[in-house]
Every structure is written in structure tokens, then in C-alpha cells.
Length: 508
Image 1 (tube, helix red, strand yellow):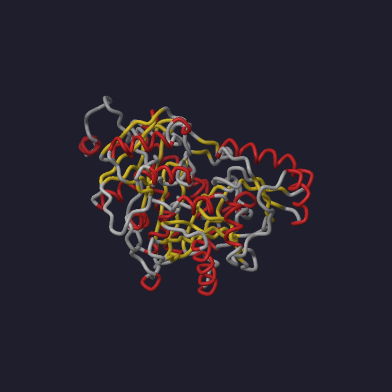
Image 2 (spheres, rainbow, N blue to C red):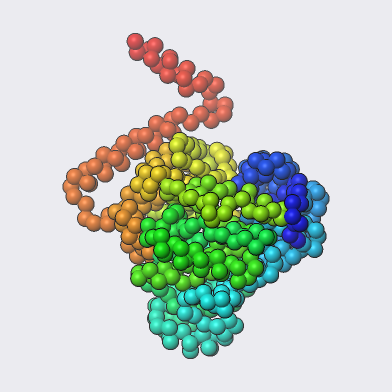
């Protein structure tokens, strides 16, 4: 169901969890709209549950028994009187049947219409749809090919090739294949993973562009025929097809290329009658040739970088469009300013293959200050469970230019303290000090092929080694100081200020 022009939304159920649920609930507060949180057994004490006006339990921790059960989400909306549902990202956000269920129940789905999700949510169908409208795509196979045909056709593209699941995202069901003899096994593996992750084992094959950059365009489209883009995001810092860092604008973009790719992105969105917020993802090769990759028919994890450079609140715009109103921004009034960088802060060990870490966050000190934004769904004492993705927060820094944004990010990462679980902040600190990253010389394979947590980009001098040793000693000393400042309830009831005062009087 899409709202008629000017229809009022009084209460929104957020069909998600974690930081994106908190983000949507905050937008509801800003707009004076009631909010409903849903939660599993594992999320009873979650931040989104605390922030919402109402909360309703939907089942056990596994997503297939809670957040992925459309019937439970719809029932929760009806029980609480919610007249709209925001799906966030992941879970049910790109399931056309869920959007249709909302329409059938008279509930506004804050997202695109079911038909657009069907056309663009399936990567292979999306490719065929935009090709009919003259949009250039990466060379690849036709939809519905058998493994026998895929094995026969793939060598014609020349290796390496990329196997991709037609459904879902997040790197699931994707395999890069560099030799023909590895193709059959990779196909079987990709199908198994796609079936497990999305309930759909369909895959296709496309040419793997070596040295390409991953650049995406943010799209907004309303029900009045207006479709615009809000500039690009650079998403090339990835590991196993999982994005780690995003920034806007891209260092390789110029005015002419931005205009051409922006027009392509708008044409791709219009080809399926798209409405609401979406993202056109592209690959740009070494010669700055660009190709349509896929469309994400939802809000992206990395949407804050676009918000910081444009000043547009994308979640508010989603709600505005869902109400049937014209979108607020127009291309003629958009004047992006500065540069924004986002680091995904995950509970995982960058020194041990990025293995996810679980446990209770014992201490959490979040960075603040000019140009710093943190979107998070955790707090001190929060339990990181194995049931959901490992994201703790998104740290976003803005500056007048890329240099200032980088310096602010370095400062913010240094201030960010998380104890109790392993996290990838050290990875981001190393990355922000990398000469290649600072120079903008990277592609989608750079992290895997050239970046290491344990080695330098070039052989360090004796002075650099000595400096590193001093820095490591100072860091260890500071960590001990921080640890000594943590007061557990029941240990003592005297503040640190009083202890400092007593210590000073004793040494006069």
C-alpha cells in the first residue's frame, strides 16, 4: 500500500533491530510520530526496545523464528495500531511478498512498491530490466541457466569471473573464480550459501573486473514522478565483498563522470517505476568506464555519509514520500558540501581472520566533538550475541575536505573505547594511516591483496620501529589507566573525583 497524497502516519512499527532501528525511531521522534519496536528473546534489553514508545515480543533469537516471520510483524503492527512499517535494511526489507502483505492489510510500507522490489531485488532481473533502457551492465550470463550451461559459457568471458546469488546481498553466495578447474566446486558452494541465506539458490556469472572500484548512487523518488540522485558513495574498501569503509564523494569522481553516472542511476531507477529511497551500485574500471551492478531497494547501511554531505535526512524523506508527499530536496537545490567517511565498527578480531566476537561490553566510551557522528544500538553492559551480524556501531566523520575528515576519523577512533569484546577499531586505525588509503589508491580487492594488520606497506626504518615501540608502550599504559577507572557497582561508592582529591592532599 502506498499512501494517498498527504495521508497522515501516526505510528510506525520498525521491523528491525540494532542501530538501524534506533535510527528510524529517532526520526519518528523528530517528526512527532509514535514508534513501535519488535524484539526477540535475545533483544529484550536492546537499545531500540528502550527508545521506542512501545515494544512487542515476536519470538526466539534466530531470525527465521522472529525478525524474518512476516506474519508476526504484521500481527504486531495490527495489535499496536501501527499504520506504517519501516523495514530498515536486511531481514524483510527487500522481500516483495512482505511489501504486498502490508498493502493487503492496509498498512503503509515505507519502501518501494512490490513490483519494483521484484524487478530490482533480484540481481539478474535487474540487469535485464536496465539493459532494456540502455544502461550498460557488466558482461554476464542470462537468467535461469543450468550449471551445465554456466560451466560452458563462463570461459567465454575470460577468467577471473564472479559467481553471484541473484537474491539478497552482503556478499552471501558470491565466489571469485580465477581458474576454470575451480568453477564447478565454486558454483556448488555459492548455491548452497545462497539457499541457506536467502532461501533461493539461483546464481549467475559475470566478468570480474580486476582493479575496479565500487561506487554507488543514492536515489530518491516520490509518487509524483520526481526522481533524483544525491551523489555518490565510494565503497571499495571491502573484505570478502563485505563493505568496511564508505565515503562521499569518491576521490576518482569529477563533475563530468558524476553527471553521466548520476543520469544512468536515475534512468535505472525510473526503468522499474521506483519509489522511495534506493541505491544504484556500479563498478568503475581503471579507465573510468562504469557499469551497472545491482540496485538495493532499501536504505543502505552507509546512508549517513550522504546525509552529512547533503544535509538531507534520508529516513525522514522515506517517511515523507511514503505519506504521498513530494520529496523535500530537488537537484537544483542540492549543494553537497565537504567530505564524509564512515567506519563500520564490528565485534570481530582483525588479528585473527576477523572472527566474530561475542560477550558483554564492559566499558564503552563513544567519541564526540565537531564533525563526529555515531549511530549505534549498544551500551555498557550490552550483550553481543551470536544470532545477528557483528556490527556494534557506525562511526561517521565529516570535514570541509577529505583531509579534515581523515584527521577527525583518526581522532575519533583514538577516543573510541570498547572493552569486553574484540573489535575492529585497530583495523580502521591502521587503514586511516595507510599511505595508499590516504592517497585514494585502492580498489575492491586492495584490503585482501595488499593490506595487512601485521606488516607495513613498505619496510619500516629503525626510527619508525622505535616510534612504534614507544607508541605501543604508551597505549598499553593508557589502557591500564582506563581499566583502573572502571568502577563496578558494589566495589566502592566514592567518586573518582574524591579519590583524586584525597590523593592530592596526601602528597602535599
